[in-house]
Length: 361
Ligand SMILES: *Cc1c(COP(=O)(O)O)cnc(C)c1O
Image (cartoon, rainbow, N blue to C red; front, side, top):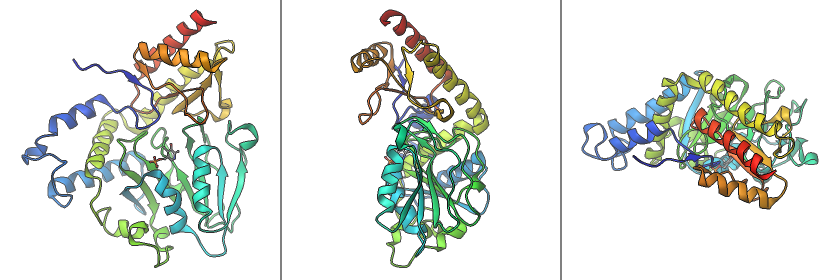
């Protein structure tokens, strides 16, 4: 039997084993074509069925209303950092951002290339350990931007901010797309790199309300207009077929498990287990995020010293628990417990952390 570890990497991240097995089974001969999905045309009817199914499943699972378009693009969420302002900016109107950490910072940097950016709230005063409350955006904003979950800091919006009517809310959901049930109608634009909670690297999901695609000016390059991809159903040029195919398999798997509400239930349970270990450790483990802003997906914590953290990461690895080192920019430890991480994996992690504490305190 293949040896599988529990993979807590932040992204690319663990994928459901049944999905990997199905991809393996189908790899050499895709649906009787005698060819791999890696080898067939993105215009073939076999691939087209996959492409359509992926969008349908995403619509179904997230409850995406008909006035929204689903796009499968390349360039990662990092491309959306500039593509969103490029498409949604409006002359004389500020773009309003909430600054919650490393990913918000990168989004803000790109928006500044295009016009006035207003930071309407920031948690920098406390090293980005919380999500600002009572955020207000002005009615004059071209759009309002938030980062749904800060993958590095481990803070997540628990309640979406309200925006003035007419101001589209834009959200980077790279690391929390489908971690819980959301009302898509609250947003004008949602984007997410797939490699955290949806599938492999190489594809970025964009969900855009159709009235917003016409804001773009004609001088914007064809590939950078949402409009282009909406009109061609994400097949303007060669799409990342294999990545989309894997996303489709993940979505099918998710549906069979009971959809996003079932995931939310399991995610809350998993996160609670890890935060409980932290909270009941008498300070041996210290959670980074303030309790009311804790992420369901990325649990960040510290031990007393970097040396002890390194030891903990090393011993975890020996126990088949991989990828617990915090992001290089912030240090500490991080357990990424996306949809595809099993309850069993989280229970193993918790048992390990408790044992490590007993032996090292
Ligand atoms: C990983 C991540 C990104 C960057 O995604 P790429 O696909 O690597 O460009 C952006 N935002 C968030 C919240 C992320 O977690």
